[in-house]
Image (cartoon, rainbow, N blue to C red; front, side, top):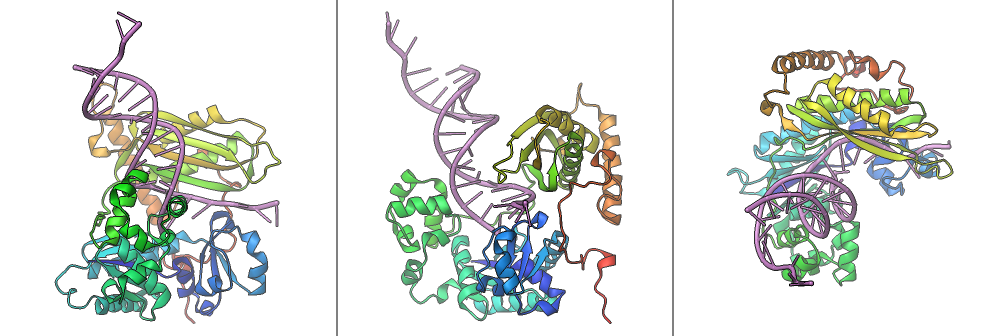
Length: 420
DNA sequence: TCTGGGGTCCTAGGACCC
DNA sequence: TCTGGGGTCCTAGGACCC
């Protein structure tokens, strides 16, 4: 049996925990650059503020209803997420952290089996008491059904917990569920399913498997099987390393000079390299892309990318930065207003498998590794960019705008909440 | 004026091998 | 003139997720 725990309106709820004045009021959280709406409290949803929409398109609604807006404070959300996951882990040693605000639990430990719903309620209360965050829990024999139950728990129950076997008539339940709402069925697939006469989850569950496989992929076949209460998707361990590492951000204002692009690319590579070392990997290639603002159709447009190999697999900032900047010089063209740069570290391998031999300088490698260890621990202890490379720039005027950011209540001493 | 960021998995098709 | 069959590996692009 699987449980899916999902924090309700996670980012908006996090803002509320430390600012109780916001309780009962519409709250939204914005993407980087305060561009798009990426989270909404229930009140904000109720007055019709759309998800993912650019902020300026919702201005009228925001002013009319006095909606409180916040820049995304990912340090705060990440830390709150940790707290929730730790609590969940104490209830379910076997779990999969699926995203910042969601986790699948294995509900098969002996002491749970008696009453799943009660157990869910207990978990929910514990999290609410310990963190202030409300969650919903769906419990079912497969992950896909647990997702569906979670959604039902959120919308249709007061307890916030819903168990698949408490569905009175499963056929009717599935019949009322449009295919688009099934986990893994997106815009394209639901359109195609509709074209072929399949509109709801019941029809999807009962369709011919051969036909399904022929017209779609193995992904859809798995979902169909999961709807039949036969598990196809298992808990995935969270220990596996990422296969690619990406860092990408749009600029706070248009950028034209190579110098500023170099600063941005250096900063993004520095961030990517941190993640690389966290998972104890080395990278063999650096991808760099730059693009103009596609929404400014009246301006000349440009996009290009380049993948440059490093001399040897590395996690050393100067090596990675040099490789990235070499690539950047090749794709940079003057005369454009750039909006965004992206870097990816590719061809990752565990650093334990660092190649030896003629072209790989072992002493050099260990020196660089030691240096990076110190670099990371200083930045961890005193805050990001306490020490940094000169190529990152000093003023960084191109940086993302975050004008409405709440304090980092839980991760920064200076931002600690003061009680009077 | 203002439009996010970071991932995964699957498939088709090309290159190459015997 | 005739031009197989089966396999692996890699990559780009599509679709999806939060």
